[in-house]
Image (cartoon, rainbow over all chains, first blue to last red; front, side, top):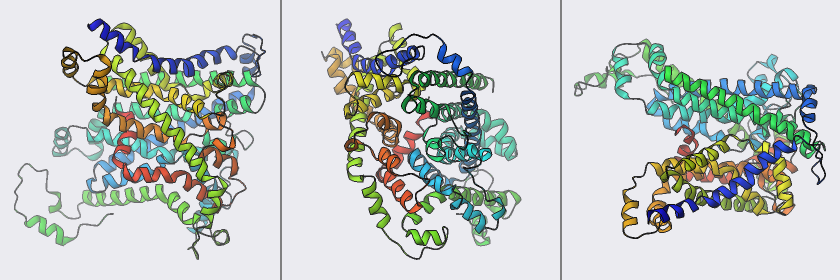
Length: 290
Length: 305
């Protein structure tokens, strides 16, 4: 009886497996194959081996985009989680404002990246909100063409990303704070350990799993960023904010270089998998040591 | 909001009998110690920081209610007049009625399929401890880190071959497949924590696997389902790429695609940009107000590991 029961249970898996295999796994393998062809999306294509990849190696646009993507991810991961941790540790100590402020901080997470990009494209505009604000508080000298200057464009785009998701990082850190054993925290307080000592030697080690989650999530999220650079700069000025995702989109759906775009997508997959699994295993090793 | 400790309050606290001997140091007894001052300053800084985060929102709402001429005169000034014209204009510009219905339909259908297929799959994955079941579970988990960009081109060819381009079904299938890994992860780890006694009792009573699932397991899955739903509905509602690529028929477009196609942020006034942005967020804000607790839980669900 239990045998038949198990067979029925196993059958429950079939719809999910069929869906996942047809619409994710199959395209994944077909994508890798397509990157080894000269396909333009039509029915006729020839196997060309590594041609697309050697072309990528000689393409300065690719190395620039790879660099922008990684730099963008590093900036976002560091600043967003740094701010999130700062907010969480301060909120944790202030019970009265904790709930209200953490919910307020989460509101930007709700809106779509497209809408966030709309709002900020005006704030960053030469005669837009940010410059008007700087002018208003007497810091007119800091006014800047934020998105039009290649040296600030990528960081400005990253700012939007950080603005949207700091509340998210904060919520994860705060959840970890709330699950800390209170006896331990109280004992440290009674021992008269300073705020920094308490943070460094008690809270920081206990936050290790939350840090792993936060870094991994924000890393994967920022490596595949799309809407922000698409709407805010569309890769400009002079390619200063071109990311791998933008090149994938442009080559596949705009440039007629279908197989080339697919090969860039494979590069993106490799980047995401290598960087996220490397950081993840590093952070998990660290979790065991601290 | 912070308030410096007033002497009246601290005097009252000092005069209070020491009723709780094991309570931490009564800090209120010593007003204006450096530590209290630091805490107060910290709270002020914290509140200011949070205000800084919502400032763009407030600015967006206020500006979208002003006339274009008023904004042009002084972008940050005190508004002289309020108007709803911007909203009615944006409403028709992005075909808000139709596109909202389309987005609702796509988000709703996808959510139903994801939860049903995910819960069905999570049950055997949680209960069967054979090697193949772990392998299938791992295969699903692998999917959580595959960016949609990697599969978008071959998916396009597949959808074309299946005649699913420009159909709601095509987009719903894509969202289902993309979100199944997360759903399987959620349901499997949740069902693992449910004791198996109930099911065993049901089995002894002659209840088949299918009935056991629907009668015993399914009712227990409500909390994890609401967490999952808030998370994925947000993702799907806000997504641009999938409908942009797979749903080009003007009558079937979503809010995000219409906003992206009809509004160019670089040439357009904030009085056009902002109402469109707010309309896109509006349904979610309404939901957020009602389901605030579940949504916060859902969004920090990444921490549940």
